[in-house]
Length: 242
Image (cartoon, rainbow, N blue to C red; front, side, top):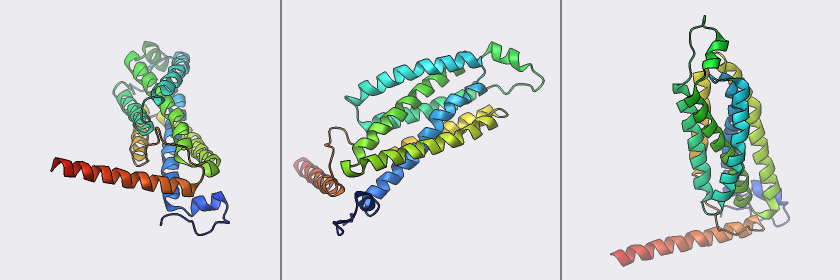
């Protein structure tokens, strides 16, 4: 058995670390959170490396955060959490990589102010869409984490997700500073990490329309029963088609 059911006197936190499936799930959530935290906060700071007016790009990003909350809230009502998160992370990654196409390093002797004055409207639009998708992924991940773990360890799991998000956020400014000399590479790293986070989330179970369990033991038992019933339905379907 994958859980630590043997010690009934153990604290919920101890049971979490003694339950293999919960440890694997928590590790995956934290790795995903690190990537999204790195990208979400890094993309906001990386606007200084866009070929556009800094104040205008900051204002655009601030406005894009509002529809991200609305879209995420609406989509959560009828969309799978895993699908919504991974799709948002993939969109963020693709947008960051596309920003490379419109990133102009330019001649070193070229006047920087005049270059940013001309700007690159396609790059700004793609970056705004990417930031909106990153905001959606950031918000959805919190809801997803709440639903992935039972009540007696939920606060701990959300706190650990928050720590991984903040760890990514604390490291991302280093890449932004490096992007001042090579903006294309900074967009590439942000895009790559976002896509990796989207792929990691595919190994997490879907939680839409599933109940919120009280304990690790209860959740394990119910998920095992659900898995067995799914296998039985699949076998019956195969037999009917034979």
